[in-house]
Length: 206
Image (cartoon, one colour):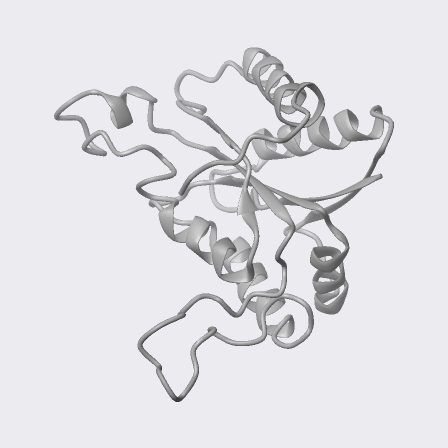
């Protein structure tokens, strides 16, 4: 039995209704609920949540799946708050014990104090930006991928806890040229590839 903890970071705010990430979250829950050998828990950051329960979810999970839009090249502010309060509550409580350094030699071993070793996570993001903005020379992101560029800090955050990344998936142009039907098909195929067809889930190097 694998335990899957799904976090919907698709905040409802301003002109954003969070519908795309809600659809992706629902597809994730449906996928794992229909597969033998998986148990799934879901948190939606738009709904009230108990902080300690979320810490427990991280400790319970074998895999954490994050769904988030990217707003102004960062996480939505309520999703960032979720991370801040839950990880703070997880200090010496299953998420991390320290930054890993010792007072004897404080210049080394930073980021080695996580307590979630052996666990994995997967990231999905949704963008107004088209995928070409990341790949074409001279376009906005200077040919830096989502994982190498804007979301690099997010990956380092999870590395700080000791978790390893699985190959994620990113959805582009979801405002001006949305194709939700095909995005959901592509996402389901991705889940099959990572969790069903691979004997060993594909890890991402970040």
